[in-house]
Image 1 (tube, helix red, strand yellow):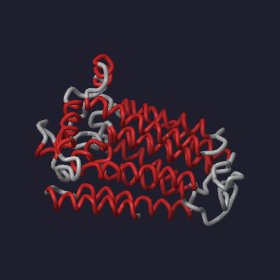
Image 2: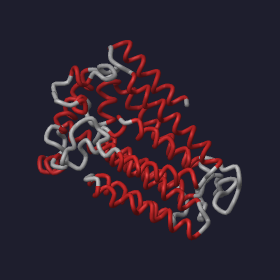
Image 3: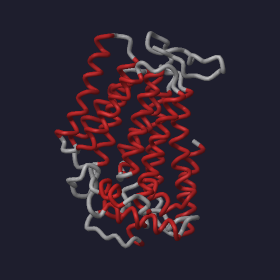
Image 4: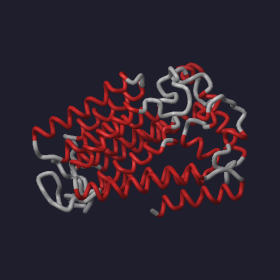
Length: 336
């Protein structure tokens, strides 16, 4: 809560200093906090039913509202479909968490089938990124079933998110060889890389406070015909351009804290690692799209984190009262 409060407070500080509209950041913080609180409460009462209902709701939302973005439906895999891909990844993670949380074999098979259904749903909706994201979460969840300890796995997830962000930053800075940069840029709409470069240029000129929340569309040289083009389509670069280095550090700190909370979670290791994989996939999507611009995505991320860190009130076959610990006193050795 201190980190989320700092994110909200810093957006107000930068808005007061540079001008701008902090409402978007405030809404994202509110949605994340509300989702996390609801996830902790519902996960404590219904450790299996709550994530199952969340997965079904996420899948239904992507089907009912395929055009989550106000912009056009780009042919590129990570164009305006970033919100849809993020919801599919979160829905897959929630279904897998519910499957690992239950001890009833028939119910586990049904929940696993629900998780598998989200992967082809991406293709049906025309979102290749959603299909890839859901498949990645599903594979990570299967691997989590044989994990012994969670510390190294979560550290690997943090490293993967950092690697995606570093690659994005290198593309925006022109630090990659032309062949590699061209190959990576071919995955996105033609104007996406110039948007990243413009965000990095603004960040270099205003490294401390940024240009102000929501002002990228006003000060950037990249014009567009839709509201979606008024954003850099990258959460780290948008934070750097609009809220400076402190904004980037706060964004990274929130993600690292979530991974730390999953490491300390009393839930079984496969549940914690599956949630970590889904949230890391979301972080990767947010690095190269505007996925975090949609309230259902931020609220869904909070819900999934809450479900995976909740302490169920009734101890049954699926939930331990306390996490098993190693000889060093650290959690992460639950092998169920």
